[in-house]
Length: 332
Image (cartoon, rainbow, N blue to C red; front, side):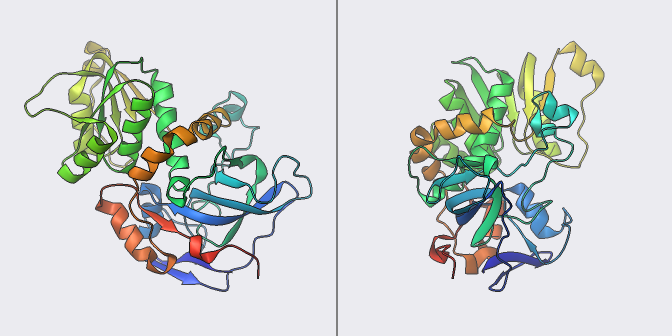
């Protein structure tokens, strides 16, 4: 079986002798069709997020078609097109019991803690595959998971319809956050040092922050997670407003308790989504969102050019993804 594996930091290769997945009774085997790339994947690719082993199959955003079901699976069928929810929570730890599965203490994540999705076929726990209500293109499959991340952040923030919100950073997650805000009836404004990324957000319906505008926003979504972006996020949030932090960095940022208290700010991190309602809600809306999700993607990159896909994901406007359609996914 073919797979795209990391053999050393910054070196991704296609191999044709990767072991076939061995599904358990509660698993399904998915013939992968598309896998998106995000900052977490870049961290793995660059060696900044050490993997359990090398070579290592990367990737966690994607989907395909079920080609086999485990003996105990009753609610999935061969032939269904599914998106993978790539965060397998334990359902037993204190966070899971509170319904906050995003904070699961034993969460398994394909491409990060267990082998990923960049392969012809992968075994996935059936309950973490989501049959799509309508067929979608491969590009849309690459966006379902990060769109769930964006929609969860908007849900957690509690943004009322009609509210002006600022998205700081117009990378792929910033674009998806703009789309989630627009779907929630909010007005999305965006700022990014790169004009091409701002233009990509405008094509979705977001608005650039006018030059010289110093108005404050009741909700700010920081999708960049770097100190320079943090300064913008805190600087543009209104008194009594909320900063939702989606982007992550290990670098510390500054906010004094005096400023936090005097301005009565709320600062909240938003990590992935909570099973099952966040992913279920995203899948339910996928038919309506599909045209706009497809519009924010870049052309799919074939497996043999995976290195180009990782390079594009660093800077190019739009969502970068690897198109596995030509692999077919049928068992030999």
